[in-house]
Image (cartoon, rainbow, N blue to C red; front, side, top):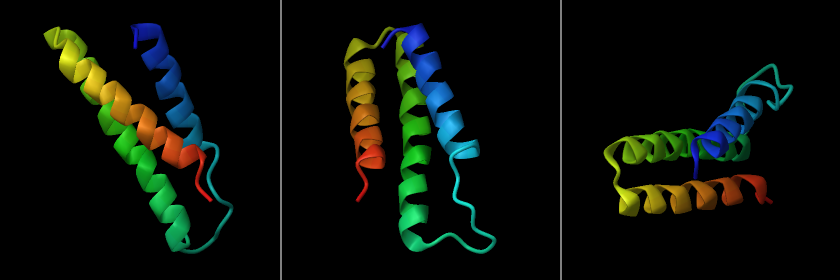
Length: 79
Protein backbone atom coordinates (compact mmCIF):
# COMPACT_ATOMS: atom_id res chain seq x y z
CA UNK A 1 0.00 0.00 0.00
CA UNK A 2 1.20 3.47 -0.72
CA UNK A 3 0.71 6.40 1.63
CA UNK A 4 -2.39 7.66 -0.22
CA UNK A 5 -4.07 4.24 -0.01
CA UNK A 6 -3.30 4.04 3.71
CA UNK A 7 -4.88 7.45 4.29
CA UNK A 8 -7.99 6.32 2.38
CA UNK A 9 -8.21 3.20 4.54
CA UNK A 10 -7.89 5.29 7.72
CA UNK A 11 -10.80 7.37 6.41
CA UNK A 12 -12.89 4.24 5.88
CA UNK A 13 -12.11 3.02 9.39
CA UNK A 14 -12.98 6.41 10.87
CA UNK A 15 -16.32 6.34 9.05
CA UNK A 16 -17.09 2.78 10.22
CA UNK A 17 -16.17 3.58 13.83
CA UNK A 18 -17.82 6.96 14.28
CA UNK A 19 -20.53 7.32 11.62
CA UNK A 20 -21.71 3.79 10.85
CA UNK A 21 -22.56 2.70 14.36
CA UNK A 22 -25.76 1.02 15.50
CA UNK A 23 -28.56 3.14 16.91
CA UNK A 24 -28.80 1.30 20.23
CA UNK A 25 -29.35 2.89 23.66
CA UNK A 26 -27.96 -0.09 25.53
CA UNK A 27 -25.15 -2.57 25.24
CA UNK A 28 -24.37 -3.71 21.74
CA UNK A 29 -25.46 -7.27 20.86
CA UNK A 30 -22.59 -9.81 20.81
CA UNK A 31 -22.50 -10.04 17.00
CA UNK A 32 -22.11 -6.25 16.69
CA UNK A 33 -19.33 -6.27 19.30
CA UNK A 34 -17.48 -9.03 17.43
CA UNK A 35 -17.87 -7.23 14.12
CA UNK A 36 -16.66 -3.91 15.52
CA UNK A 37 -13.74 -5.74 17.10
CA UNK A 38 -12.51 -6.40 13.57
CA UNK A 39 -12.17 -2.63 13.16
CA UNK A 40 -9.73 -2.56 16.06
CA UNK A 41 -7.68 -5.33 14.46
CA UNK A 42 -7.72 -3.39 11.20
CA UNK A 43 -6.36 -0.30 12.96
CA UNK A 44 -3.50 -2.36 14.40
CA UNK A 45 -2.62 -3.78 10.99
CA UNK A 46 -2.70 -0.35 9.33
CA UNK A 47 -0.40 0.99 12.01
CA UNK A 48 1.92 -1.98 11.51
CA UNK A 49 1.97 -1.28 7.76
CA UNK A 50 3.12 2.28 8.44
CA UNK A 51 5.75 1.00 10.87
CA UNK A 52 7.06 -1.51 8.32
CA UNK A 53 7.22 1.22 5.68
CA UNK A 54 9.33 3.39 8.01
CA UNK A 55 11.69 0.45 8.63
CA UNK A 56 11.78 -0.46 4.91
CA UNK A 57 10.72 -4.00 5.81
CA UNK A 58 9.00 -5.21 2.63
CA UNK A 59 8.15 -8.66 4.01
CA UNK A 60 6.47 -7.24 7.11
CA UNK A 61 4.64 -4.63 5.03
CA UNK A 62 3.28 -7.30 2.68
CA UNK A 63 2.24 -9.52 5.59
CA UNK A 64 0.44 -6.71 7.43
CA UNK A 65 -1.25 -5.57 4.22
CA UNK A 66 -2.56 -9.08 3.59
CA UNK A 67 -3.79 -9.36 7.19
CA UNK A 68 -5.49 -5.96 6.94
CA UNK A 69 -7.34 -7.01 3.80
CA UNK A 70 -8.41 -10.30 5.39
CA UNK A 71 -9.76 -8.56 8.49
CA UNK A 72 -11.68 -6.01 6.44
CA UNK A 73 -13.03 -8.76 4.22
CA UNK A 74 -14.40 -10.48 7.33
CA UNK A 75 -15.87 -7.18 8.53
CA UNK A 76 -17.61 -6.31 5.25
CA UNK A 77 -18.84 -9.87 4.58
CA UNK A 78 -20.24 -10.52 8.04
CA UNK A 79 -23.46 -12.51 7.87
